[in-house]
Length: 170
Image 1 (cartoon, rainbow, N blue to C red):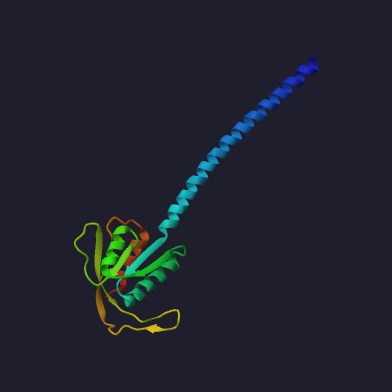
Image 2: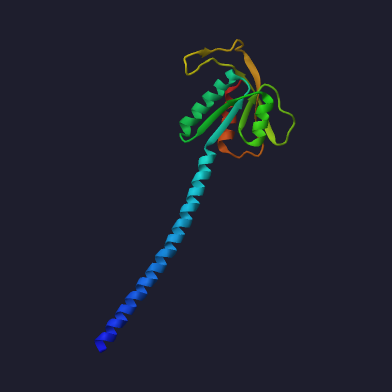
């Protein structure tokens, strides 16, 4: 009978250790799932920050911006860039709604505290499209352009693009 009680206590102890182990593992799983969700959200946020959307009013000045983006992509391989084109009112609306980060246009934007702008002299450049057609501007002299971006934009890529683009101007 003594051996039976010892066996029963031993089995009870084993079951208690197994129950505690199961409880500890389930808590560890909850912590790991929480950390995994946090890391995924942080990764998604970083992924969004690697997007840079540029818009321009002039097709030939887009080439200058494309060269700046090419240089930036060499330094930041995960940077995804989008170039759009449109009329100046459309571009400013897209900037205000957050669809683009930077606008390059001919005229100065209205006095608006929500945006910053910098005048730059850019030379329109020829480029060849994917079909091999060369697009050449008639006027290749330096042209006054304005680079416009959101005042509250803290994206380092926006700042870097503006600084590099304005540094290329005369």
